[in-house]
Image (cartoon, rainbow over all chains, first blue to last red; front, top):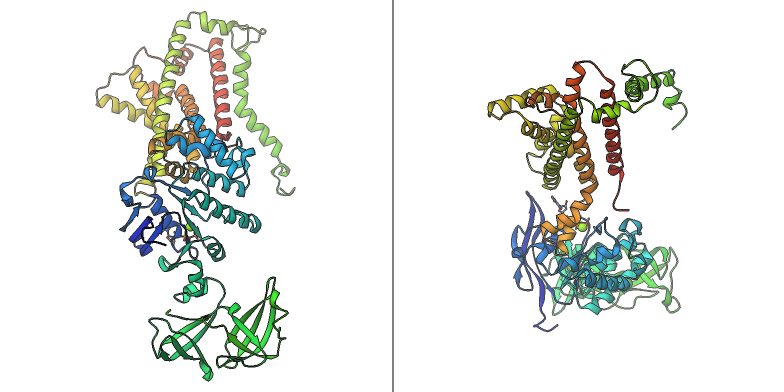
Length: 363
Length: 268
Ligand SMILES: Nc1ncnc2c1ncn2[C@@H]1O[C@H](COP(=O)(O)OP(=O)(O)OP(=O)(O)O)[C@@H](O)[C@H]1O
Ligand SMILES: [Mg+2]
């Protein structure tokens, strides 16, 4: 990204309180123009609250939000170039699908005929042309969701806010809609701010992800960075599966840190800024970046006994227990079964991590 | 429902039901049937005739009844319209204003008049008009009717509002509608069945009212109920039954419409 990338939504030290409950702790983030930006976090962490503040349905208790340089408080909802796909769709029940989709355009002052033409185009985009004259109550949940999307896209907003729009869909439709949404975002160049509590969805769709927990921003970054370089325990644990090992840092030299586990086991990994000698921290290792072998392949190989193998479609997860009693999971891709040995329960094996796979967490 | 708890198997169910129906509807049946009686007597049946219906419109008392009918209908129309407008505004405010401290008291204050004995309201209204020196006449009746119609108009509207989530208005404003446009284009159409239902109810209640009207009306200004009462004091004639039957049919018609409107769903 170059420096002149325009910032679409700039949240600066924004705080939201309901009475004496703080729903959103001081948060700052800049969402870039044309970006697919995801707010990810468990239920109740304040995702909807932040979205509603951007849309203008909640006021900002402290701090400020800027929309393309304008202070948001100065713009009432109907003047913000922002549209929302609501968590419960909020389609107007007394209007037909076509009228729903054309509503925003009419409110912007377009003629009825022009609004209709554009609405019909939008319905075609979401493949619902044949339902144009139905009322929302006569559609399935997935169809309603697509109408809500078409309605929000029709006025060509600069920013589209989507509040868990896929949560009502079954797995298959959900996957199809994810691809569809991503496609629409690229095609239209609209900035998407997408809310989800599904980490897999966030990883596959986003340009950047903001991981939130309990009203606080935990980490902001590209999906790959968030997955491979989690900053703290929460992010490591929330995004994907991981092995968390308690370690003590014995030595930090140049970029490497030597760590010891309970029971005299030792490991070395990349040093992380802020984790110094003597620190007691957690080490996160993704199970798919561990390898099993019959003999020790390096200084960092740890001996372990296989507890069981779990078949999970594309992968096999092997549960092991280290000599010091900690449990560890190793994931082997099913397609690699030929080249890698699968150990049976009760057998002894050596666990080795790929270089750069372990990550010290600052908690 | 299992057969054992089915109310129809309780002893005496049929007899009690029949008794209730007779008590409720026999007087109405008698009035309706005898309004078609050819005889000037109200107890002797002499054959079918529309004579008394004609008498209502052309007989000696017809001028009085025509004036009373005009008063009744014009008052009912104006009172129901204004009461419905006020009720719509209050329902919007009370349901939409979120949780404010006076929410419950406001709700109570609006609906309380339904529970207060009408005679108390009548006396209170009369004292009020006297104390501000309002000369009794058509206007006093109208003002009193607007006031006591509000809770009747309010209830169906409020019931309807409860089922309308406020995300609809937010969605409208998100789609560039101003507050006024969101109200007109989204909220109002969704409330409409409740509003019409409330209007019809208010209209009937106003048309029907006797006690309050009788207290606050001026000399020489009559509505249908007070005119009928005045006429009955000099003895019941079959023309009264004809008027009553006509009013009864009108009421049934409007209550039926109101009922179907409350079921009507403009979202299907
Ligand atoms: N109007 C309100 N008054 C008081 N507290 C509120 C209000 N709205 C939300 N909250 C609280 O703020 C917190 C954040 O809520 P929010 O709706 O933003 O969560 P969320 O991250 O969207 O969760 P979900 O994934 O379940 O939708 C919650 O603890 C919620 O109880
Ligand atoms: Mg939410």
